[in-house]
Amino acid sequence: MIQPISEKNRQQVIDFFREHWGSSQMIISSGTYDCAMLDGYVYVEETTIIGLVTYVLHADSLEIISLDSIQEGKGIGSRLMAEVEQFAMEQAIPKIELITTNDNLQALKFNQKRGYRITHIFPNAVMEARKVKPTIPLIGNDGIPLLDELKLQKKIVD
Image (tube, rainbow, N blue to C red; front, side, top):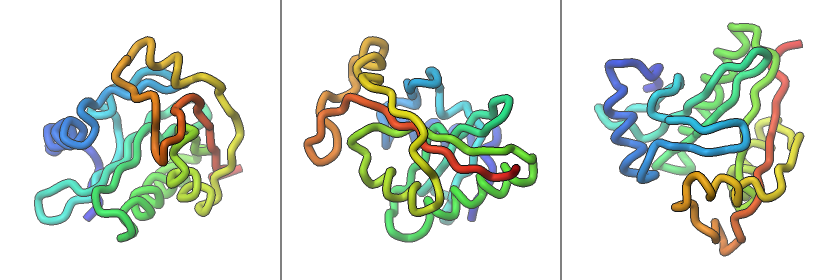
């Protein structure tokens, strides 16, 4: 079941980030965020969060900051993204943006299959983020050096 993040489930969200990320702090080109304090949606089975998405609203866009599913291949991420896109349509938000790292080939594939397009590359952005958060690893998924960020965007309403 998908539910909005609220004060009722906020502690579970905090715990989810600590367990799966070690911290809820996210440093990306668009800013530094405490993901556990952002708006978003959780996917809950019984009483356990098994997926969540967080976002921030900007003047002309919604930016997805995090998307997680601990049970991949079951459509949880797809359902969470659909929920965010529905919210954006209802609020007449013209576009959704997100940033991922150069090593996250799974996220690039997932988002491009859903109509997101690469609009910007931020060379060395991860190296800059490491200055603030030194725990960011040097090597990412599949042994790929973790260096750059890519912005993806999808138009929602004209």
